Length: 154
Ligand SMILES: [Zn+2]
Image (cartoon, rainbow, N blue to C red; front, side, top):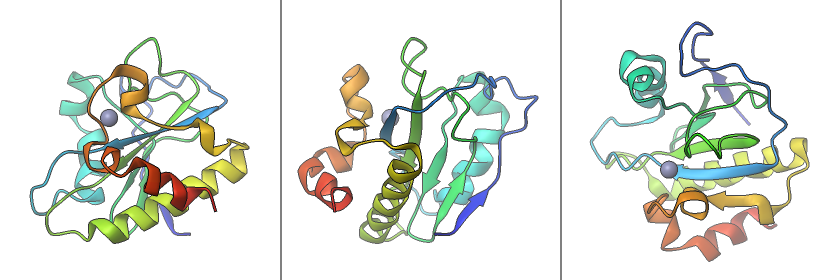
């Protein structure tokens, strides 16, 4: 699997550097359907001032073309609210209208299977953002959560 690493600079406040042992994988969607709102665009965003100001960061962004990693798996990101970020790997799935959502979904399932294997995380601990906070995220995948989970349960 081809994972491109473009880490958030260590000096950024949204890369707090706290060490974690990931127990859960948490699934998000970007909600940005604009053309070009792909993984490369979100990799730039998460390194930039807007993400610092909004106190957000996460580990991976996936689109139909591939996967970009923004934080090491063993560092905390800020993607589900302050009291719950510990021990979670956060993955954003792109929903850009010029991307192939079905292909992106296959890529994210492959990434999740890889992370489950290397961190010994069972599929019962692959959860939605909604699971933690009630937010309607990942909006598209939540409408097909059962069939999505079937992709990673192989
Ligand atoms: Zn989310």
